[in-house]
Image 1: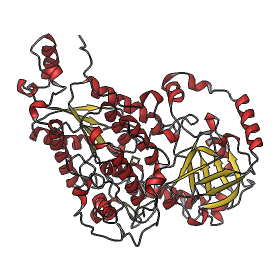
Image 2: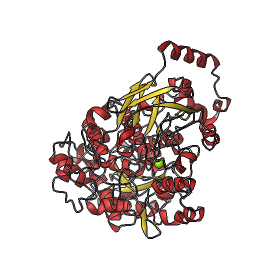
Image 3: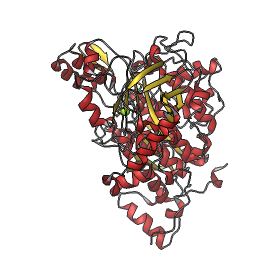
Image 4: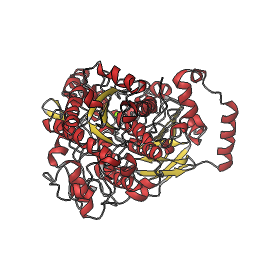
Length: 580
Ligand code: FES
Ligand code: MG
């Protein structure tokens, strides 16, 4: 496609010298933009999730400046705009509750404005899928620029990782092995620079997913937030997006089924977050690519986890970047025939394999050789059975191998408050073989499917030295967390899934190798309990107004990516009718 064939969307606003063109240009000129900027230059939206309430993205104004320089250098007109910023650390009941809201904001902002393409400035967990979902529904040219991870946390002379250290230290306080003072002193040391969580949590995972999907430049995932090379990448991305307009390189040419299969393999290799299962499904749904839960096993199976990062392993994102970052991992996969689609196109116009085929690997402790992996099979396990008819997931790389096949008796918590009150009860009937079951924390039930699935162990067992137990819920788990934790049980309890009717003392069987999650009661008994549940179930009155009502009425179950039913699909970026 040559330049003259490309019809700029923005020209529908700024092109005509009539009443409407006057209006669209005149108000923009109050920002000091000269007239020639409106004459045939691609208008590049810089979609910014900057917010002081999203600390992981709080450095984005500087990042946007570098993108802007790149856009100008390549002959585009940059226009920065804010979108809803869902920060993981502050937002209650969970940042996931507003992921779809942010995606709607992004989609409508792109479609309704004189924008030819977008640079998506993302960082904290949900901002990456939200912006990709919104942009995918418009199918405009788009490139992801991630804010980058924080420097390694430091505490008492050693490295500590975001999130992971919180889970570890809080369990140590409960077990009585460290003091509360020691615990508190880690706070400032854990988060000591700009950036996202420095573990392979959800933010780093989604940054790697964007890179593996080919919607960012190589190395976007791992460069630390404060490393000057992050700003060079932002500049280069700004330059590149202008050419993507002239090449009509829209998201649908990058976000193909092949790209998603590459990303699933990459997730196994990096020991990525279970949240990626939900977010990739939601993104795929927006662009119209079929992706099923079982693809995570079908495509991912047999892929070793070679990235030795917390929470599954030892190191942090700084080391990952210095060791070679995601290009080094993809090269390793490709050389072993484990990158299913080396020819998949990426944002720089080259195939993913062309981008990584010569990527250097500088540290084989951090990015291990395939014959010395962290886990031989890093694929996310998809589980099914009468307890999860629509599926559930477990991350084997963060689990205890001996617990991956387990039979134990349920200790049931009806909701998070019940769990908090009951888990500390010294008389709770529980031992290391028990299975902790948490209900009503799914998409509708919480609402928003909070990251509470890695519920802490009973203090009395922690004090005995127990470090892991099988836990089952309809919740999610922070990507920074670990344990033998069955998540995303679908349908969720609040939607009448069988999880709702598990009783204390029921036997539960988990077999990760067979992909099985079974509640060991007779089928008639299960049916009878479900019928009773349906008869007694009353919708929550708090869900009847505001965004919460929209959310609860329309959110899809975890196996469908928790998008809103009415948002699934690509609606394109046809220019809407005039506003006056
Ligand atoms: Fe924002 Fe972890 S809390 S990236
Ligand atoms: Mg998180």
